[in-house]
Image 1: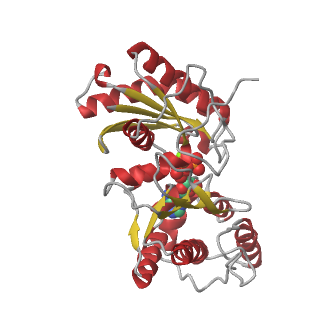
Image 2 (image 1 turned 180 degrees about the vertical axis):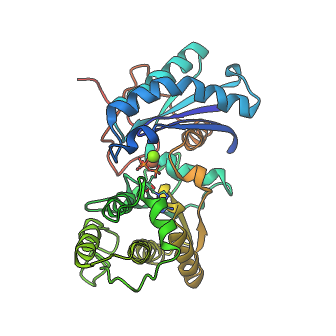
Length: 344
Ligand code: ATP
Ligand code: MG
Ligand code: FE
């Protein structure tokens, strides 16, 4: 059984996976401690991981009805992410691996996000297109064999991530942090056509797989300034519609361009109700199978790290050496198994 540890941002996650099956997981979040700063404070996140990591591993084991002695390998996120936060997870993973005498694997955070989808509905078809949408990432990926092949990066956001856009516009609209869930809630009673928002990078000359969300924030701010009494639900609905429209349009286009029959959507923004509905509608119309894992597997968690670790173990991948370190800016074009950064 593989123990996965995730600590790249504000979630401390532990997960246990054997043979592609999730046995137990636990997540602690320091989100409340960051709320008053309206964004993640790296030092606070790192300190919270120190307090949370051992209890989170304990709870995951208890939920699975297993003991530390059952752990056969440890996988940990080495990047990308916050350096100090990643360091806590890597140090903990080393302590578990070395004290138990089991192999250690350092994995790429985004490969973890992709692998989360295998825990709901089994192995992913080779190839498939994956849309990762979170507070820190908006990427379209072409995924082959997760454990063996490098993941091909089709496109990325040129500025803000989709989740960041929700968070920033929520702030402008006076909605609470994190903004995504607040926008989703407010949008329920709003009219998405009441506010005209642009669809960035969707012109015929634009990169079909690149995203840009910072302009939406500016457009929303201008609209608020121009209204004597801004109707928040309308703005929330219009923003949600614009983001979901662009994301699904480009993701479906990536599938049809490459003749790929499966689209996987992961990341915290995959929780968005309009994004889910529109993805379902457009995938169905294009004959594409859509896979969106349950929310607890979409946001940062340890189960996804255990899932990619389990795939690596089963593919006979080489474990990491003892000098495994963090790689906060791990490149976007990547393999599941993170190369060991050589200390200077
Ligand atoms: P990373 O980018 O490294 O994965 P993260 O912590 O920013 O880290 P997640 O935890 O996966 O990412 O997702 C958090 C983001 O998802 C936030 O920006 C939040 O606003 C957004 N989000 C959560 N629920 C919704 C929702 N219902 N609609 C839109 N956005 C949402
Ligand atoms: Mg988070
Ligand atoms: Fe993440």
